Amino acid sequence: MLNYSFHWNAAFRALPEMLAGSWITFYTAVLSMVLGVIIALLLTMMRVGPWRILRMFAEAWVSLARNTPALFQVYILYFGLGAFGFYVSSWIALLLGITFNNAGYLAENFRGGLRAVPETQMRAARSLGMTSFQAWRLIVMPQLLRVVFYPMTNQMVWAVLMTSLGVVVGLDNDLTGVTQAWNVKTYRTFEFFAIAAALYYLIAKAVMLVGRLMAWRLFRY
Image 1 (cartoon, helix red, strand yellow):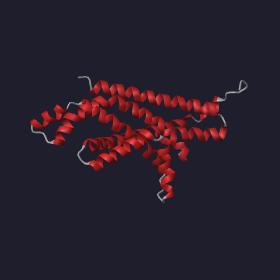
Image 2 (cartoon, one colour):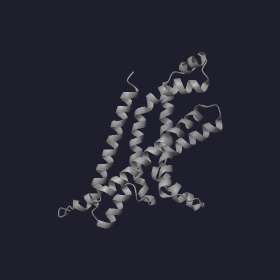
Image 3 (spheres, one colour):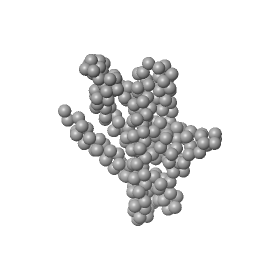
Image 4 (tube, one colour):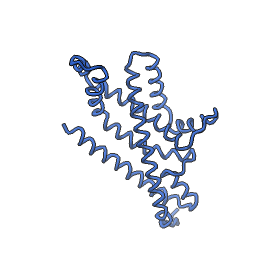
């Protein structure tokens, strides 16, 4: 171990490809969050709605997403569906897996945030002549998003890190996939994965910084 010789030149030569992979990683995480937020809002409405079958469906989704490994979820979508004749690409399997996971965790955050909004807000909005949809969109949702904004930022960081699971289903153009491909060719494991870890760290810190700036801009008053 003490005789290990570091060779950073090969790793730095691969940096442009790793940066391109970082963009794929970030794009995948953002898309999974957008889809996850939309699905989580639907699940939240199902969980508080009057229809029992929808409540059971939403509860099952949240329970499975939060109590099974994310790797298992990606595996099921890539290998499990293939066993039944439904084949998806590595990237689609990763995107759907992270989206499924994000939606489950965000739905639970949204339910907690919804409980933080007084029920009198909805009644007051309806008393002013708003429809139920208008009351949700104009009164409840802004307050809900204010409560859950920081947990959403944390989930975005988690989504970025979860994209590394794509390598186990053959994804080779994201940051981890590119890093592993170069590692196999050069056997410089430490150098490549050290740079990859630094890039993941920078992406995560950038997400947190953007989140704080957005919070300052949106919730100053």
